[in-house]
Image 1 (cartoon, rainbow, N blue to C red):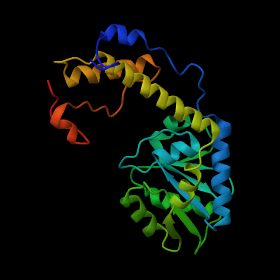
Image 2: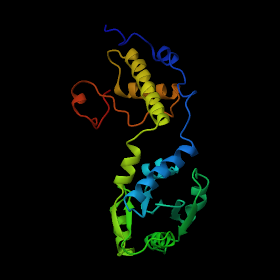
Image 3: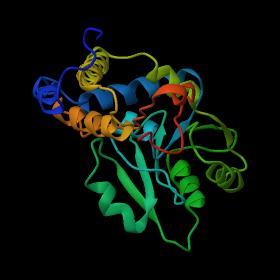
Image 4: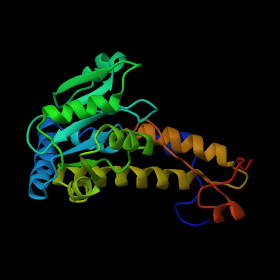
Length: 244
């Protein structure tokens, strides 16, 4: 038997794992503020009057607001100078308010109203006028971009990835520390998982162990976990049915 592969029970393997998040620190308000400052400096240098951050990873990265993209527009306007303004359906305002890390006005639209017209009004109040440039989050759905184009035909709309990538590809020391710890946690889980493998074990058993092991090291559980044996390993994103 190869060293590190098999020989341990699930219980004993889990017992070797401990919470690895106790000495870590989440991204704080000061870092979100620093990210916004960096984005705004870049925007001013490149004559980008504002960017729209759609619900998803960019909104979370710059503001700490965790929200999912859906058929209803939820996002934020970040002007080149000034405060962020959040935009959401009126009935979601209280939910967004309690999730705010970076403070900012939240303006809402009713179901019968156009969120794109509301965005246009927010941009107008921020000082944008004809010929100004609005960068739109690269992950924004087409129907939203189409709505912007129709509501703001005199505004030049570009891909905001120049701003977002410029900020996100350069990691701070605290980001690197969190990434490294996540990698350390993953490796610890992999090592523990290898130790429980034996002939006849099923992929579903291994997946469940990986989920529990992640919780032991301090994560909420596993995510997008794929376990494959034999020929199935030639399919990068798995096969339809578990191997049992």
